[in-house]
Length: 373
Ligand SMILES: *Cc1c(COP(=O)(O)O)cnc(C)c1O
Image 1 (cartoon, rainbow, N blue to C red):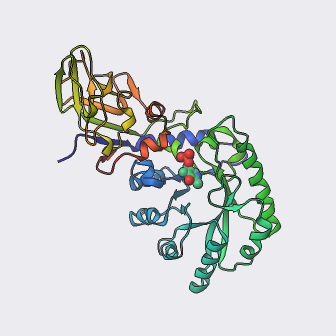
Image 2: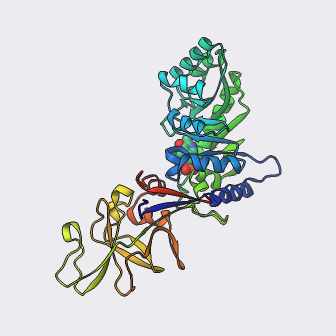
Image 3: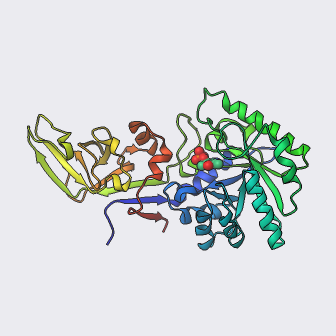
């Protein structure tokens, strides 16, 4: 048995997005490599299938949020280097060794823990050093490195293979902080150099920065969203990035409502004329956002049908008056049908959120179906 509501993930689209990115990155004086970000189950697309696709597409490195995500990839046979973004806790360090993951060192305590773990095993651990250039999340402050780097530079079991930072406002063309952070990262690299820390690899650019400013590319770019074919709003791109994920279901019931009737919880849709309503078995437990109630659309018979009434846990209702809809008809919540398309970007704009959230929220009970299988 398989549920009617399915997320279809087109792995060829992901490979094509890597190729499109390579076209952008191709430079006479050295083309940066790509760190493919597959955290949060590859933005809802399925971490293992996406990581395999990226590996085959020749991507140089993968990145995930925590050690557990990295272990899942290693157990599935992924062999490329895997960078772990998150903060290290002491107990995590065994996983780093056992599964050959690359840790991020973002605090003096973490550096010490890695150094001690390396000493205990008589091994040198290669890691990436995270610099906080203004986001005030993880990382060594860019303006305090003269104090924090000497112990790190003296570590004999910790090797700094890379230094990186992360932009807070790369997707905001108005924000001055983007340029400020870029300059601070350059200053931080100079400070590292003064302390004898000269990593061969530097990286900074998420998808938005990659599109906006080639001075952020360094040796590697670090996109997530673009790999999935979603250009971070409000930016645009002339490159042929294709959305890799579609969310489809089927009509399970069709009924007429009369004037005076209401539809769904709270009877929030109460038409004044007779309407045809289609019931679709996908709700907020599947990741259909409740804010789409009386606001969003789905595609049926190649046309846009409004989502009417509340979004239920397991169902939504569509107004399909005049569409000639029948039970069993395909419904597209994200994706295309006929000449119409609903993108994750559109859904995010409708409900006032970001496309990252729309795809990450797709529920775990939804089967992912991969093409090619
Ligand atoms: C999530 C993440 C990325 C990728 O961001 P996109 O906007 O999806 O390209 C890059 N770097 C870090 C540190 C991240 O956490």
